[in-house]
Amino acid sequence: MHTKIIDPKNSSNKAIYDNKGSSARAINYMNKENADKNIGIFFNEKEDNILHDEVIKKIDSNVNGLKEDESKFDSIVVSPSNEELLHIGNDQIKLKEFVCEVMKNYSNNFNSKQKNYQKKEPVILLDFGSAKYKFDQENKESFFVKFKDSKNVERYIWGIDLKRTMENSNVVKGDKVHIDHLGQSQVKVMVKEKQADGRFIEREKTVLRNEWEVVTDDYRKQVPLKIKDTPKMEAPELVWYAAIHNTREYELKDEKISLRITDLKKQGLSKLDIFKEVKKDMFLLKYKPTQRDIEYFYDNGPVMSGEIKPGDNRHIHIIVSRRDKEMKRTLNNSNRNSFNRVEFFERNSESFNMSFNFTKSQHTLFDKRWKMFQHRIDHMNLKYAFPSGYLDSKKLFNVYADQRYHDNFSKNFWKLENGFKKGTVPADPIAFVALGSNRIPFEKENNVSLADMMGSMKSLGGAMGEGGDQEITLLLNKLRRRRNQRSQDQGRNK
Image (cartoon, rainbow, N blue to C red):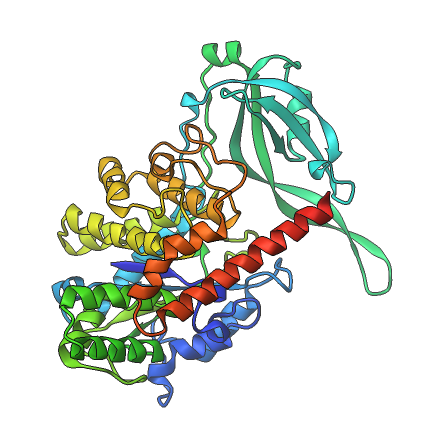
């Protein structure tokens, strides 16, 4: 089971999935298999056979409270595997029932993340008070709490709602305290709105208020923290529609990959060596076809862009509004504090297994997730220079196998990637992924020279075949320009 929340910025179909305006393009694409028929193929948890014009109207009108430049909807694609499709047979009703379960998982995921507050260490309160956000005079007025954590690092928490909590607490500077975010609650406030004629009128508005608790360590030892349960959303509060697609088409990038495989095959390379070469091509094309597609290209030769893919390719496109039905709450699945994407994806697989009594081994799921990390490791080895020359995927796999499915591996790997993007690097990347930034900190600056980069990437250019050296040169020039720009920026800031 593969679930994907489409990011319009990184999609090959940016114009279709652009979600800052009308949903018409995305919904017309969802309706493409039905374009010449005047029948409704859309459905949700309550209705079936809904016309696409009605879907556009519902999504586009459910935007009150969103600014012009904010996202209005999200697009989700759910793709069952061949084994899963074979298990349920040609039963569209089962697929539709499953999609309803997917959207229940989607709604229940918001604010469902449970934190283990009891294991948090106390911190030393250093200072607190009102100030411009991050002490920048151009920012709005806010409230800060400054503290020293258990690793002796000074940190800040910002939030206007902290002011009320600190005023009502009995803590003073120097105390050992626990600072806990209990969630959010809805409150009604009166706001003034300017009318077209210049007059101001008051109206009631529902807003979200952050709830905090700040207590001394001694108090916490006597009175355990009671976490306020944030009410989970139920599926009926969502505005969503789905359509089942029965076919997939090859893209131009599939055509290029298939031609490349055919060419390498003519050169007499082994199947394993061909696949290794193709992985490098996939990085340059910023495209990753499925393993099934790659096997098909190897066995059957090149394909043409627009050609229908063979086999059972049923999948589901879903469009969901960024606002709930009452248009009181914005549903942002990109916010890590309120939505856990990994949990959502895995929950969908579990829902399919439970709904249709389908059994899939944990080993298969484990391997599938590792393939994703392997692709990112290959990408980083081509793009960045490491102190040891390259990021050893075998050592990383051992860490991954030891931690099996633990979120810490994903979080630390993500931090490692972002660290390199910012020009910082831990002395031991493997240990960093295994132990995290608390144990293996980043160095202040990545001092690996461009000469070192060229040395570590020279062999990659030769291994990429015709045009490989040219691609590596272009990539190194891009890295050189980034470094020069960063140096200029640092010079201007001094």
